[in-house]
Length: 81
Image 1 (tube, rainbow, N blue to C red):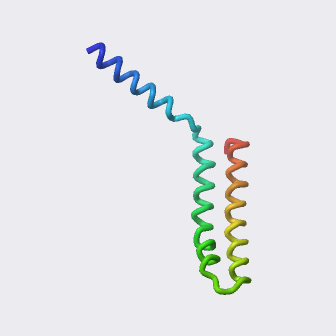
Image 2: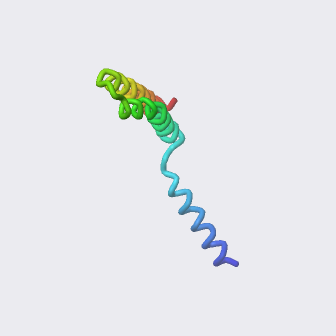
Image 3: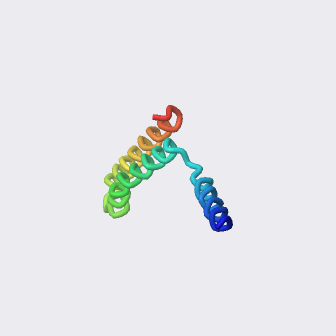
């Protein structure tokens, strides 16, 4: 019984050790991921554009969305929001 308890406790502690990201870091990562997801349709539109002007506009929009997401994520990391 002691062996089972020791093994179970050790496994639990290893699992806790694997959770190194804080809630703040997880939130920041989620913000960046969501911004990338929001930018994807614009990137796809740029890829499929037959006009260079439209392609450029879609790429700029996608980049602006991703940059805004990165800035917001950085603010969360810095301020713990």
